[in-house]
Length: 111
View 1 (cartoon, helix red, strand yellow):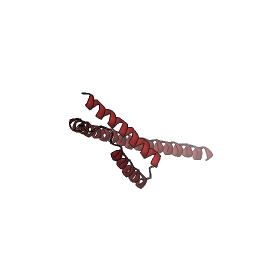
View 2: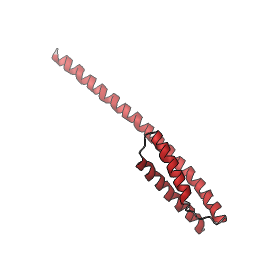
View 3: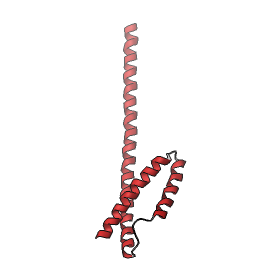
View 4: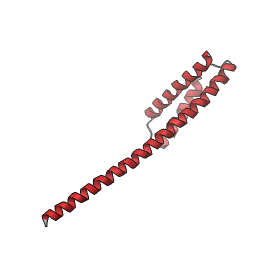
């Protein structure tokens, strides 16, 4: 009787482990999909940045607009709080995006 119970327990544990792996795979697929969407959105954002760079070049506006960046930063920190993201994370993220944007705008100016 104990051998049967042990066998059933092992089968149940194996099934539970398999179900956990399936759940983990499902979660990872969701993360992969969200990462794909994030990258696509950032790419679309950089296309707009390129257009802004052209506009600024034509109208002799410098790429760096500190007041505008501060507005964007504060708005996104507030949005981040709403979805439980830390201020430091949002600040780092927006600074990275801003640096890439400035790089793109400066590249347009050099053309």
